[in-house]
Length: 143
Image (tube, rainbow, N blue to C red; front, side, top):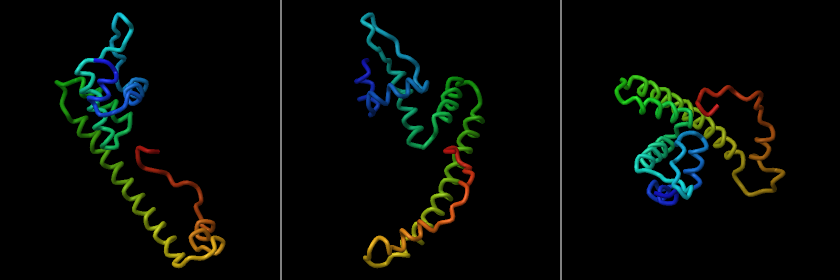
């Protein structure tokens, strides 16, 4: 199977396939005598697995860890459970951050209830007057 067929089958782009290869999430494909990349159905399944992990917002590091665990099918799944529990904690932390952000944006929006000049806009004045201080430490896998 050629790279275009792999991308089509896995519902992604050729660039995505190459990107995951460069990131080390996909192994280098076999090469034909004419030096074309040659992909197997197992390669497509791994690509789909990676894409499913990305839909779940897993980082490349988390995906690497999970792929390492998948390659040991006889091992217990405790490490998989732990990895997912950590990811859930990251998602919960991000939800809390986004909830706080929504509150800040809503408060800003309330500062400007009618059309006026930008230099009199309560939103712009509110943003300019914000006391942000140092960036807060994030407790998610996003850093």
